[in-house]
Image (cartoon, rainbow, N blue to C red):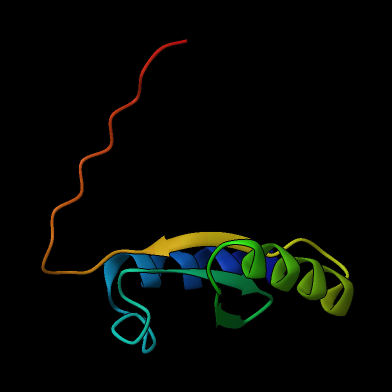
Length: 79
């Protein structure tokens, strides 16, 4: 059940329909259980993720919340 909740939260964040999507637009966030937490930048983010792993007992899902007024292009390059 928790995984379904996380997938729903991620889907809503990516589509811009989550209540916090506008607040975190253009930023990386960690999704743990039902919580959406903004990530710090650089080495501070690594330390923050380690603390979240210890607090919740599992690795958080890291996603980028897109801004809704910008188009993003993903380019996949073969190895």
